[in-house]
Length: 116
Image (tube, rainbow, N blue to C red; front, side, top):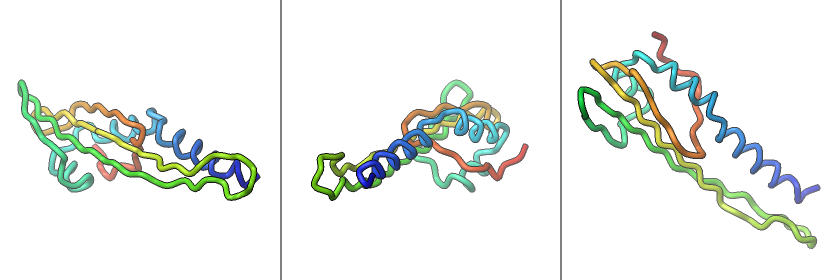
């Protein structure tokens, strides 16, 4: 039983982080927000670029957590560190968010304070 606990934690953590629809809904709530509103909530961006009338504001996050292995004498999962990464890029036209893209296994959102 104790051997299954780390596996259950890993499965729950990865399935929660890998689910795109909740994060996509979170990003959709930023449609129409200004760059200043993005910075106020997300902090300074990792990068910004301008191209063909659009401004792209990029945020990157990396985090990791440790899952201990089993401590009983029977074989079980060994200890591991799980890496979670997320890159989110907002596209702004006329200083307002019009689109977004994201990739990574650590993309998760909370409720957006921005309400259009």
